Amino acid sequence: MPTMRILSWNVNGLRAVHKKGFLEWLKRDRPDILCIQETKCKEDQVPNPVKNAPGMTPTSPPGIKRDTSGRALH
Image (tube, rainbow, N blue to C red; front, side, top):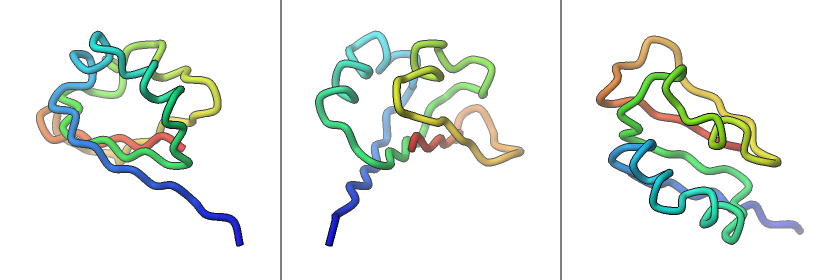
């Protein structure tokens, strides 16, 4: 039976963690689903390289606040 890797990470600022090598980590670790919390940015503020990460589709719940935003990449 195949396994699925689901990871959850409180990034405490998606734009900041992006500058610290987030995409390189994502390419190495390759989770099937990645849930990230405390992104501290609205959907239109997510860096384009993160939005367009190869093999990932970003989703987010509607009506979220900037300081408590959550995202999922799958």
